[in-house]
Length: 315
Ligand code: ATP
Image 1 (tube, rainbow, N blue to C red):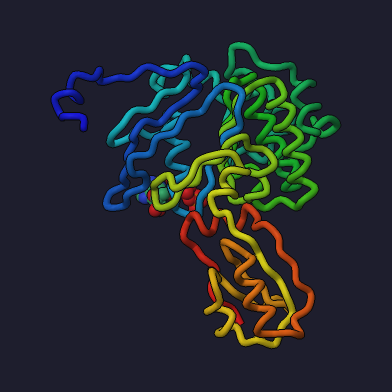
Image 2 (cartoon, rainbow, N blue to C red):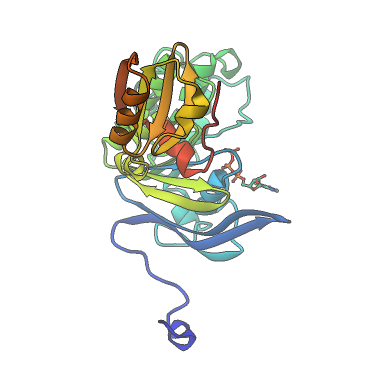
């Protein structure tokens, strides 16, 4: 066991590890009586896409605000490019998409980009940024006349124009249809392909699965899981068993290893850790059972299980 005297001999400030772009170290943050984060540690490494996932109020925006120097922790340390995140030298290396923008409606796409480019020492050529975000041809369009998808792409373009090393995307595709979401992902992928680093917060698990190298799952201000999308799914190594039966749900609920059970149209769907004992029991109870399928569970279900929002038994 480590004694308290050993702990006090440690330096107050730890140094960034190799490849570290940003880090929270045992950070806690309260807003009045609300605890937003409790002893959260996470590290963002160069060249990776890290997704912060969690239900509403989990603390994702708070974690990003601390990393970007927009708020200060009550406890713990925050580093951005090895420095305090409030330092200008750190902040000019970051591009941020705005979730709720106060962007003036009466400026054109090109005017917005020129304005943002003027804030940075080495901005990218506007023609490149327009091309990369699919906005070529819309330079003279007023912000107020852009569609939702075009606005989100302009927000991405504004984040990219300063040629940042770190791109922070806070819910970048909220409210977009599938086509617009994919177009925006392509813009982000172009950035990733240059070996840059991305911090993504999203409610869309598909987005984390498609874009992220690593996922940190937050719930009620704490890290509840961390790993690759595949590792997160493995943490909840369950199987989904589907079949058509007349057996009542209440009976199925009592069979070996059943975690959840619900009807889905004519089919019954059950989640279990090990499918074989359940399948044996089912076939003994119902010789007329049909349509048997066993599949792995998706990221969505893994996420719900990790954050404790388990499915209810539905009839
Ligand atoms: P969402 O997905 O809904 O955006 P989130 O995971 O980003 O949620 P945060 O916005 O970080 O979560 O909020 C964490 C907790 O802190 C919530 O309970 C929230 O109500 C509270 N909170 C956040 N900002 C403030 C603030 N400025 N004042 C008071 N409470 C706050």
